[in-house]
Length: 421
Image (tube, rainbow, N blue to C red; front, top):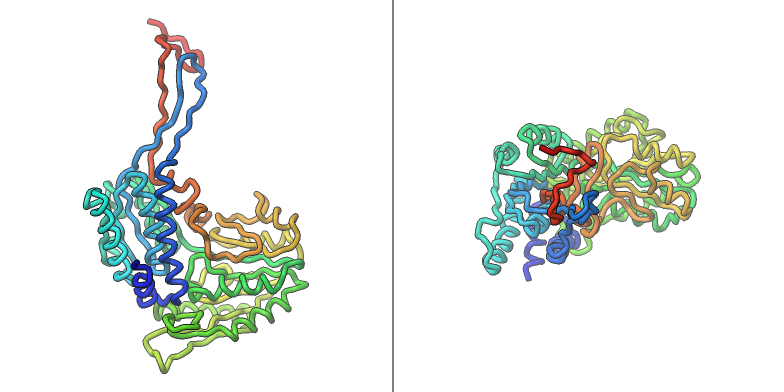
């Protein structure tokens, strides 16, 4: 009923094109459907006891208040991932949204508050607190917040993680990503091009799963680069709410300046700009920051390539064998999302294996972005290690108790210990 209204707010506040904004709202609907089913599947285990006449099992209980700090780029979806799961686990939620998207937050919270009232649940089950860093700091430091789920930069995570740990709270961190696609010599380049362009240029490169690097086999790297450059030249850039637009604006001036600095550094490190670069629509929209998505060809993975730039900036570099490609994929501080485009099953299986990608999301013949809610979402290393949304991510929102029930009438001790008074 309110999907289009919420999508409009997302487009207005953070510049997502209409189809992506609607997709984000659909994620809210999907995670709520998922959570309702999950509410009947919060299973514990029953284990065989070594002692006769005993039963060993585990039970799961609500953890307590969950604090959610969300970022601008998914102003509704990330909150809903956390909140829907937390609520069915029995946890109340306090949400601190991005200062860049307060209207989306207030609208989403109002809809949840209405649902809470209609269900006869406690009125304070969910709260939203709009404000600056001081609000986030209050959540981070409060002993009454059992789990702090924070989405943002690695720098933010370095500050939040130790503070929560210092009070022995739990944290669930979703931080940066420097996501790569490995493109083998056997890859379908038409499919690859479509997958790369969406992952790298969609959402103006402002997803944590946006593709930042293409590591292409030397036999196809030139052809693929030409295909990508041709596709980039056709990307419609403009008002995100206008029909046909595929690339909206960056969120603010700082994002544009970060992209410009990265392009300058790439040039000093030997990079060649093969597509894009520069600002668009500056005269028509001087206070907005539209940019032409950019591709830079690199001979090697230089320092700038290992840094995450939160903008539509894609580096393309060559490799000679799969071992080298995997090493390049893994040779960045973050470990969020990755993919391999190949027609060789052995290559795909190696990339998926323990010897392959070290990321939390590892795909085959699809880009690095656009995850579904049914799987656990998150990554390794400086991405933070947290998991949200589907699979068994619910366990982060609950506490586990191990139970031993003695129905034997005797009192045998574990490990054969004898203690008779």
